[in-house]
Length: 97
Image (cartoon, rainbow, N blue to C red; front, side, top):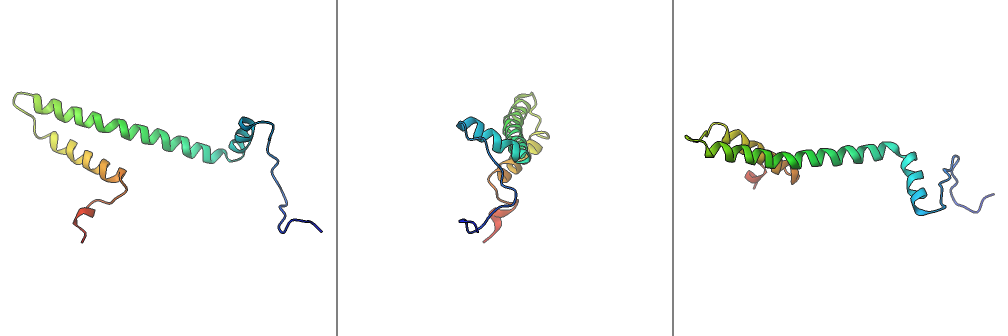
C-alpha cells in the first residue's frame, strides 16, 4: 500500500541538480511543445514584419507621379485583415450589434 492517493506507472525522473537542467529535462520530454512555441514565435515575427513592408509599399506608390492608387487598395485591405486577425476578431465583426 502506498501513501499517495494516486500513483503513476511510468513516473518521469527529471534532473533537479540545478534549474537549467530541470528546464531542459522537461524540454526534452515535451519536445513537440517546444517546437510549436518556436514555430509560433517565428510566425508572429514574420507577420509583424510584413505590416511595415505593406505600409512602405503603399507609401512609395502614393509618392509616384502620378500616384498609383491601384496598388494601395490591396495593401490597405491586407493591412486591415492582418490587424483584424492579430487582435483575434473576425472579418466583419464591426457590423455586429
